[in-house]
Every structure is written in C-alpha cells, then in structure tokens.
Length: 163
Image (cartoon, rainbow, N blue to C red; front, side, top):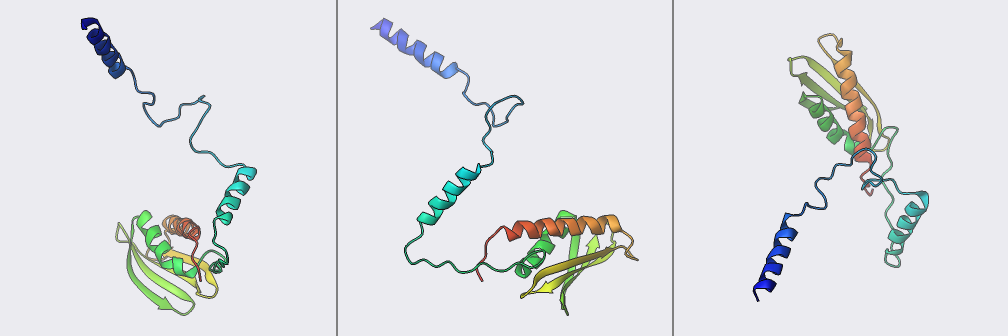
C-alpha cells in the first residue's frame, strides 16, 4: 500500500515539474515550421470551392460595390479619420465641396493644413491632396498623411460591401 502511494506521488511530482511543451509563440531562426504561411494555389482553389459549395441552392449574391481609381467613396471619411489619427494630426472641420470632401487639419505643433478627397459615390475615390504648413511647405507631413490615407483606404477596400 505504501509502495503504491510512493509511486503515485513520484508520478505526480515528475508530471508537475516537467517543462511545458511550448514556452512562447516566437519562432526562432532555423526552426522549420511556422503558423503563418501563404496557401498554395491548389489549397486556395480548394478553399474557394469549399466555400462556394456551402451556398444554399438559388442563392444569388448581390454585386459588390464598385471601387474608384483608389477606393470606395463610402470609405473616404473613415480612411481620413484613421490616417490623420495615425499621423497625430487633428481633424478640425469637415465639409462637402464640389467634387469631394475637404477637411481642416491641425498638427501637434499647431500647424494648420487642409486635406481634400476628390470623388463621388458613382466614381469612388479618385484623388487626394494634402497641404500642411502656413504656406503648404511641410511636404514631409503632407506626404505621410497621403500615404496613411492610401493605406487605410486599401485596408477598407478589403471589406466587401454590397451595393
């Protein structure tokens, strides 16, 4: 009886003191496997076929919203808000102007600027123009805002929206 208890106690102590199988989710250089990987074309095709086969009979998907040269018009405001936030610039005033939207901006150092997003519901976003500084001379910050806007618009375009 005492021997059986000692064996069970030994098993419990050894089982509880062993190192865990996984200590972190960090992949070290030289390790053969990784969790994130890109699907091959045959795996992609099989995934799309599996998703398509799950649609009920008679299902007709609505057409997706047409994006303009740069993105969808309904995403323009959200992309602007996210872009100026990313660049640590405040959006002070928003107004509709012929051919698009115009935003008054203010940077951390009280530098003022304007951002104009051109386009329409029918065309989508066709252009963006940013001027920062008293005389539009802070091109570095203006270019950062434009790049952030394009990145946000691209990310929002990945979200499918029916018409």
